[in-house]
Length: 188
Image (tube, rainbow, N blue to C red; front, side):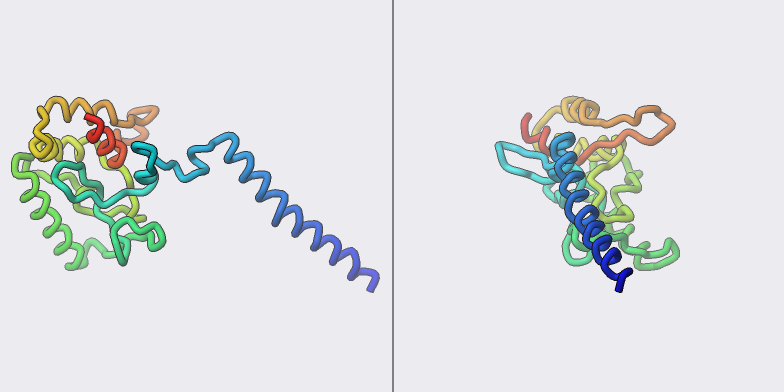
């Protein structure tokens, strides 16, 4: 019985520290130091949240840039069912899906080059990727410019402006956040 009292007190103390004090402290510090990131990195347009910079969206209209395909189960870009398709490269279902996506992209982008960027036909591991490469955005630029009746150089300049470059070129490829790019298009 003499060992039970200290054990219970230690359990209560550690529960209070790790279950109440620490979470409140870290949440408070995160909201104070990084308010945008701790709030979900929400992007606003006209005072309304349009989405998160961290989760892709399903753009399908010709006047918008399209992101990577989403492999989430019930609807595209569902963060509650994040995950890849888990199809092997040798799986015929993956080959059929990629072939269908290439055909759909070529039909929607007849003025673009024949080589479709790979990230526009394959889903990311999470199925939620919000970014595409600058090359994939430039590949779609003729379709978007024609649909919005904008000069192609103006759309290409916007892509260049919205491109995020890695700190050092050998650490990654330049990417474009699709939602941010489409919001910038709406401002033109």
